[in-house]
Image 1: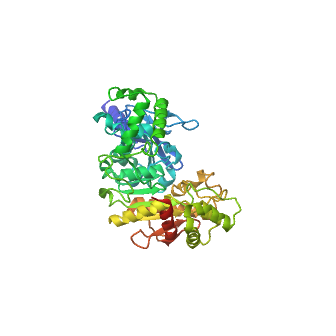
Image 2: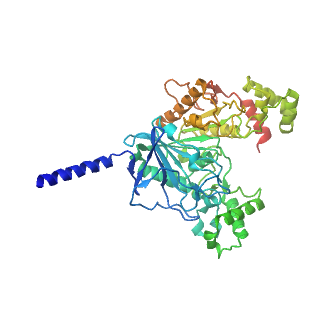
Image 3: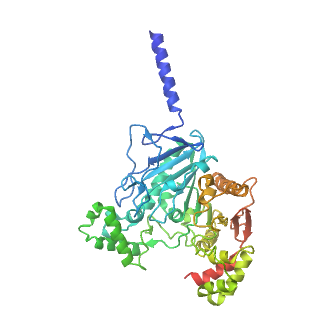
Amino acid sequence: MQKKNLFMILGLMAVLCACNSDPMTVKTTKGKVLGVEEEGTIAFKGIPYAKIERFMPPQEAEPWDTVMVCDKYGPYAMQAGGFPGAVMSEENTCTLNVWTKDTKAKMPVMLWIHGGGYATGHSSWNPGYGLARKDVVFVSINHRLNILGYMDLSSFGEKYKYSGNVGELDIVAALEWIRDNIKRFGGDPDNVTIMGHSGGGGKVGSIMCMPSAKGLFHKAIIYSGVIVGSNTTATSSKLGEAVAKELGLTAETIDKIQTVPYDELNAAGQRATAGLRGIAGGFAPTMDGEVIVTQPFKPAFADFSKNIPVIIGTTLNEFGVNYYGKDMTLDEARKILAPTFGEDTDAFIQAYWEAYPDGSLQDMLSLDRTFRYNSVVSCRGINDQGGAPVWNYLFTWQKPTDHYSAHGDELPFFFNTIEAEKRKVPEITPAVANLEDVMSDYWVNFAYTGNPNGEGLPAWHSFGEANEPCMIFDEKVEEREAFDAKMQELIRKHLTR
């Protein structure tokens, strides 16, 4: 009888051990999660990382007793209009997703912050399985946006002191979740790269100026996201006061804002923003001296982040006016440029041909004149700060369907997911496949070592190692030094204040 009981106990222990070694099930600090197989990786989607109350800083997520099935993305953050078929939620905004190949490993972690400005977006836009297949742990998040994430009500009292930055504080909470949990997913909490596109890149810049994020990440990548000039409390608080006025609220009744339906709140925010045009910067992070201690990208970051290696880059066209598909003469192009560059129009044309000898008139007119300029200025500032190196890139590959290299077109190449992006990459030729492999390899190398260079890749020098080197990502991958400096100087003269 005793022997039978012993065998039963040993059998039960074996079952328990087998369950505990199941790579699809991971125990977090708040409860167990069950992942699913996705494209050669294990994906855990929709994990709560924080609990939120309107306009308040995030708190720890509530624990759960059962195994949470994490097979779909969490709800979208509340946003005007939403997206077809989207499920939005205010209370359950703060969720994250993890992709990993091996929950027992110790791999670098890459945290992705989606684009969409500070108003819209969702983590499902850019799945992480492609980079996870190259031996990193990829994490993406949803967090509070627009009026819920960035309305400054601090002038109404201590209770709302941090309301203007709760969207950024959500990201810090996600980094804290990574610190406390990612080891169980095969990630190294001491090797975390934060990266973001567009508004997500702007958020990365803000995080690098937040003392509460210090030590939670170790590298940064900013794609088309050098957003110069955050709000200050002086401007953002005026917008918060204007929203309250639109809703008929005073200092005595301000707490009623907690229960105003989102659509009504958002509409009041839009009216207030229109009324303060040119004064307030809209619903965006606020440099308040405490949560965000200095202006990001002015031209670098807070001194405590100067030892963070950074990659910054843009695409050829971004949001430039599309002149492709139109016949054009040089005189016609000159007339289009003249209102902007005046007496320097011919100098700009000459500088363009020097920078892009194989370009076209359509390229010249459709060229981005904002993101690249800001990125180069920021690279200079980071380099001058004298800490960790910064690398610069320009993605110039153009879709054969419209001859354009638009805002965000580079993402599937860096993420190693071009096979799923038929709209952006309609045909995967050997050259295109190689471009994807090279770009994603640079990113994985950077996640591992803080330097994108590696065996078999073209040498990519940091800004301090050569004369403003820029890695050009096209079917031919090559580094060029200060190749468009004359153009950028004319852009500075005519298009910046």
